[in-house]
Amino acid sequence: MNKLMRNLFIFLLIIVFIMAFSSSYLSLSMDNLAYALVIGIDKGKDNNLEVSFQFSTASKSTESGSTEKTPTVMDTVTAPSLSTAVNLMDSYMGKELNLSHCKVIIFSEELAEEGISEEIYTLINDTQIRPSANIVVSKCDAKFYMEQTSPELENLISKYYEIFTNSSKYTGFKPDATIGDFFNSIICKTCEPVAILGGISSEKPENQGNNHIQENYNVKSNQTPIEGENGSENIGIAAFKDDKLVGELCALETTAYLAIRNEVNRFLVSIPDPDDSNSYIDIYLSPNGSTSVDVDTATSSPYIKLKAKFVGRIYSMTNNSQYLSPETLETLSLTCNKYLESVFSDYLYKTSKEFRSDINGFGKYALGNFFTSQDYDHYKWSDNYRNAFFQVDIDTSIKSSMLITET
Image 1 (cartoon, helix red, strand yellow):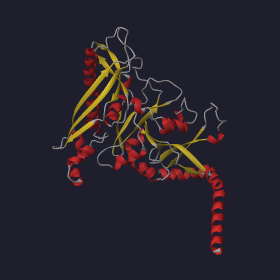
Image 2 (cartoon, rainbow, N blue to C red):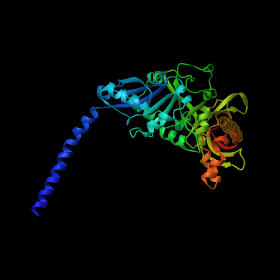
Image 3 (cartoon, helix red, strand yellow):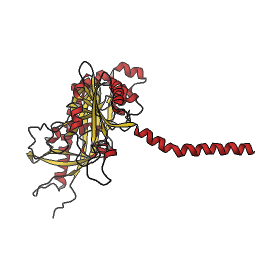
């Protein structure tokens, strides 16, 4: 019995010793690591990649409560592959490069057009990369995009990259596209991948002087009428076929994409005024249930029917408006239905005829029409999607803003 107690005492002593020194060991390990917040990948010369890594020097930041921005460091390395670039950066920095805090992976448009499957597979195969990291395709060099990114309302750039996709839920202007979803879409047979469309805000559209949001819905990154301290912007979708970039979607088309996927809580549209063809009425819409999708694969030309319901409130009014009467609200609802049906149909035919890419994943609905996966493969959904026809039915119920009542 005494021998058993002695062994137990030795065991407990070892446990206490390990716990006492584990924190100092962890601290020493963290001091030997360099945490990359953002990775930017550009096409280099001679089939090389130019890979940029952005780090936050948080250890050099000022005292808590300071309004000063935490400085960042960015280094670029040219290498034949992404994994080689990481190894070279380890040697250059004298620390082990750690990607567990990476928030965003940025690809240049030039590289994305040639295909990025090798880089996606390399990143996904790295256990440090989180599947929730966002993926951006920049219309300019990824390095330049990173240099221009300077958040106005966040001192920590890591915080900005963590929350910058939150607005997708209430604007519908960009997707919350992650590298995990991108990888799943590459290997999936029922959908195609997308990424956030990024760019810089130096190039302005010719119509930026318009005073309603109708034209602003037709813009994308590099074209917005925004002027501010942050030099980068993220509006629109980069659409892919397999691993290659095949097209871009503007803000309005992105809203249609998200609404069909039930990934937007509310969004603003500007519909033609039924009483004045030269003016528009701003309506705030919220989905009233999930979008219904039905796919008929009886022929090689899929027939896809969509039904969506929305509840809308008038967002802009004039002092002499009559938008509070039931008759006028009914007319506005019908006008909104017609407008949204046109927007959704145009967007869907663009993905089908121009992109030939099922980015909305209608293939998962078509899959239920086949007894076996072999039958589905024989149908060649990915090829036949370009032959698809669409029927879109929108049911919108528009109400007043409830802040104004007639007297």
